[in-house]
Image (cartoon, one colour):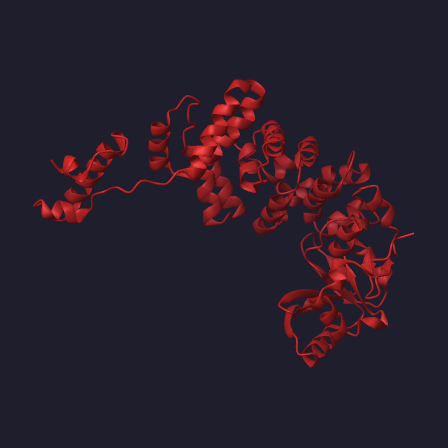
Length: 403
């Protein structure tokens, strides 16, 4: 028997109650679906709260407006309207069935049949619905899969993937977050057979899924199976192996580090500028994401015996972020290969966290006061003086630098 979710946190939220009341959910025609139900049944936090409804989109809009809620017609062609209640968005999607798919997009028709709506979803654990009364509805029998932590496609795995090839990456992402043991055999075979279909997906969708996968508590088993099926090589051809991410995740857990998606990505990539630029362009990384990868690739790894003065010079020239990334990877590696260095790496990381960038004590005004004219030569002179100041361990005073 599926337990009631009447006491679930997501149902007790005032914003949820407001949105459900606006839709008249007490009549059973609107239910919470997907992640909030799945996560709560697993004892995990519910993040996004989405609704499925038998109401048509125009009725959802009308009811939302009558209740004074903000209404956003997010995707009317697919039956989705967003209601904002108490500052929180709720995606409300009319029950639907796919009429036509091309591996990326679908043409849908609306329905009032809960089982038909469930049948077009990706995995059985995502086809669970919860009414406003907390009763969980499981039209396809997905609850046993959820209990077993089995990520299983609904119906025929290949059919589900051909509807949307992103489901290949979602299969591994959900396995990383919720799976246990070995992946479902049929799903794994289908992903392996249909992986060429990843080529038709937009870069934004692929990168979004990869980021979610890398942010799982421990993505290493999923990445192993992605490599085994050669899905990883298709989705992330720049990768040169996954051995380093295993030890990085182990180090995160041992050192109490907060999981860092880009740090984990670095662990499977070579520090080669050209390859990273190609990756950033192919997946359309943000400027900040691309800049971090490139800075890490070009930063030197500090020696474990570096003095605090020399480390401070390196930080001044390179920046804290790239050196911190290098040190974390070094610590993860040396926990296996040179454990005697681990205390030194911890000290260096602690030094970084407490380091304040020194302020160069000269400016163009000081050189003007010395009779130098403004122009390119002044900029070159300032750089020379700054380099002298750095080499002095940031100790030279302005007078000593100028004379």
